[in-house]
Image (cartoon, rainbow, N blue to C red):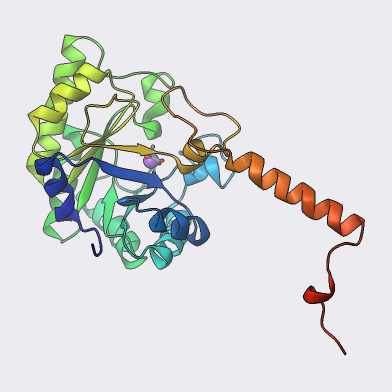
Length: 265
Ligand code: KIV
Ligand code: NA
């Protein structure tokens, strides 16, 4: 099939087809993940942790997201490209959110993602009305790590679960085309998924969501550390290290470059 577009997300939920989402931050990786049939490539602000050496997503700037978004969009031929609005570029309200989102869309994003619930409704509505599809992000929202008291499961207990479902309904009502649910108890994610027409995409939210997302380095086994909810589907870090070791050996023993890699006079 051709390019994945936002209406395919709702279609997938209706049909019961799971949505497959991975992060990507550069063209070389995006090309591989796109060719693998990944439905959605998320230019996550996790670029800060994964690629830029920050210890959270909080320092990530809009300029950094624009660079990564342009790179991923240039390499994705089928996947839908969604880009995160980084911390501090949308919380002031719809005008700030719109100005920031426009930069990501001009860089090639087909949709933007922002964190938060009812407090983001006016911004979600403004972006949607401007023709920019919005993905919500509920549960553990890393940009609020300081307010949430660390990396912890959200939505435990009746009251917190009810609040999460209300947030989800409000975002969907405002036009959100999908909702990422991070570190939410599986039964709560199931209930929330049944409560909204917008598809849910889980990370640490159990198998009942309409799709799954992982940080690609966690998925592929490149990360030094990865969270409990992630699974390594490969050992790409080890493979890369071995390739670099083989290269180093070949250079030192002068078996590389060989004649076929060398130009005559
Ligand atoms: O930035 C990111 O990687 C994300 C996903 C974990 C959903 O927001
Ligand atoms: Na993110």
